[in-house]
Amino acid sequence: MGRYKKNIWLAFLFGLLILIRFFEHEIFYDPYLKFFNKDYLYIDSPRFELLKLVVSTSLRFLINTAISLVILFVFFKDISIVKFSVLIYTISYIILLVLFLYFVINPKQEDYYMFFNIRRFLIQPIMLLLLLPAFYYQRKGAK
View 1: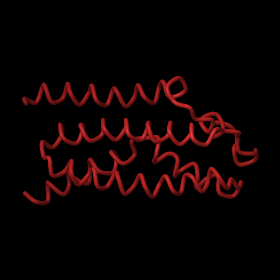
View 2: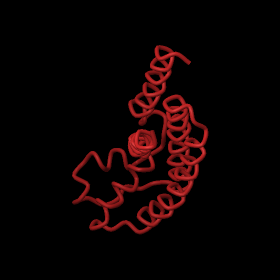
View 3: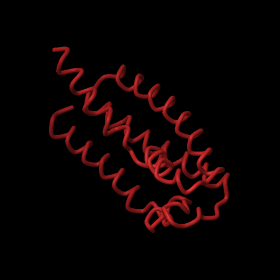
View 4: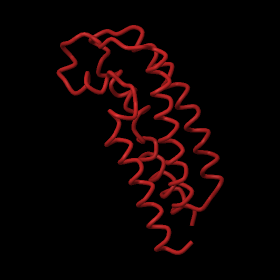
């Protein structure tokens, strides 16, 4: 794949991540989107449907993960990086979802900030922002 074609693919894939973020209110069920836009440290946790919230959050994580894995493949052209990333994403998902469920089921105002950040790792492609430079510098150091 030429450099021009690679850049077009990367722009398209990053554009998909941006569109997911832009249309998050329409695509996903997440009462915490509005909650965390307000002064959440001083209000009660919103009402929600637990199963619907977990499925929606998991779906968003899965979509962001799939796009992120394609970005990593297009960027590095190395299937071993993608395989390792799948492992990282899987372990992260399990740990983050357990923590997410704990904070959703046991809402305490003093835990809202921690919950906000855990949730952010689930619904935003933050792992990509960590893995992309990590693999880049690992590759650069290997040469």
